[in-house]
Length: 123
Image 1: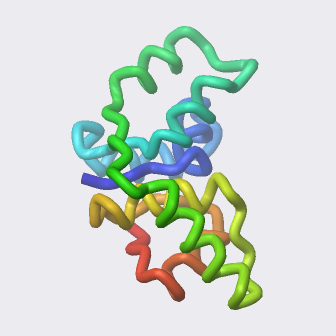
Image 2: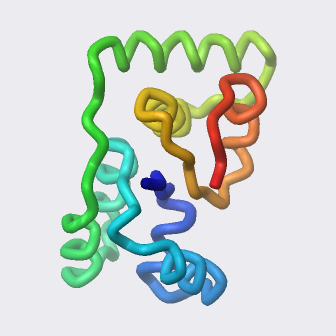
């Protein structure tokens, strides 16, 4: 299974980036999962079509595990102490991936810091 970030999912759903479309078409859609915060982000888009909302709703969402919020706080603290960028949403996505030992498919370069300092696997 692979966790997919909104930075890949939005262009794919909108058909804006043929490269992403091919990439996600190659990765079997039944292998994709969403972090809870990504699911919320995707459904909150004011321009989200009904078709896209249905597609998002079919993707499984990772459950949060006991201690998730504490670990996410400590993860963000570690990155900030290392003077690295650690947006809260990215931290929550990274922690969900780490908790489930799953790679993240993202175009956002901010996740590189999580890969370097917390061993987040990037697909």
